[in-house]
Amino acid sequence: MYWSKGPIIIFIFAFFIIAIMCVPVSAEVDIQAESAILIDAATGDVLFDLDSETKWYPASMTKLMTLLIALDLVEKGELSLEETVITSDNAASYGGAQLYLEVGEEFTMEEMLKAVILGSANDASVAVAEHIAGSEEAFADMMNEMAKEIGCTNTHFVNSHGLHDDEHYTTAKDMALIGQYSLRYPKTLEFTSIQYHEFREDPPTARYSLNKLLWWYPGADGFKTGTTSAAKRNLVATVSRDGLRLIAVVMGVDEVNGHFRESMKLFNYGFSKFIFKKFYAENKVFGQARVGKGATDFVDVITTENVGVTILKGQDEGFSTKISIYPYLHAPVEKGTVAGELTVIKDGKEIKSFELVTASEVPKGTLLQMVTKVFKCVFSLAV
Image 1: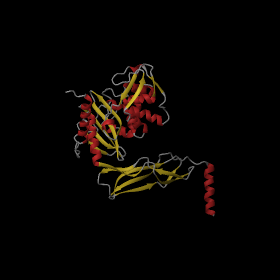
Image 2: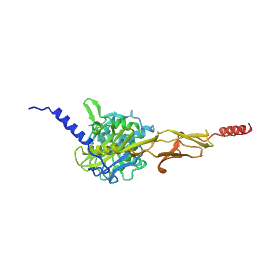
Image 3: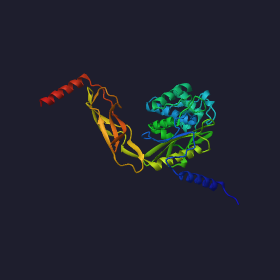
């Protein structure tokens, strides 16, 4: 009797997904990896931890930082996604996962970054690094500086692609921080959620994303895989459901597709146990701070992130918030200057604080503005 392969493959795929989705969750999730972590993307709260500060090789998860460097420069106006990136001899020489770039071949920065993330192309990673920094060594310095700014404490990059080097390492905790930070840039999810993209017509060249969670797990919409013989199988991934976005990192998984399985177990655990209780949306204005000797007398005070806490389901009662705004700021005041604090309180106990910052800059007032203010004040008193 003849059986077509199509139905068999579909059956196996469906069986695999159902098995994963039905894995029982408990406070003690059995994760088969060298290290792992699950955090709430909005707050950074750690929901699960397995040796997350153990140093490990990131492999191609490195490319998330390569993307992050580029997007940060784009936001600052120092780089354009429309710039032409020309492939050097050095970039074209790289093997492993690649786009098979030829010396002198040109793509826009946007297309190169898609190749970096979607196809995990090592040659494109080097081309991007050289275009931005002049050399891969200089680009690695930028990566390490950014890692420090993010708060990574056990990370050191020596290249833009993640091919093995003993001095190229990170931790699950640091990769989660990098993933969380990357969400500041909307293009991160735009790039890392792409499932398929065509790069050339002649010769026909297309790539499918290596992150199978984009197909296998509802709500999965981003980040990067990483695999080498030394690193085994790694994944930094993010999933959003019902207002709660989680980030999971697993490193050093032995089995084929095991990094996807272990990540799904973490996400199953997180979404079954926790909810995000939001009190205020980012950029909400909470009041104004008085500015002394400024071009204006007051400046709006806001929070730059969603204000809330990740809590166990069924424990969302007894919360309140307390807002404190500084009474006076001295001009000049830069945008983002800390001007107060918002505190979340649970049953009378302070559990989390958020900085309140100025929504705009206030330059120092001119002499004419100061004189005008004095006259207005005198006039109002006289009246």
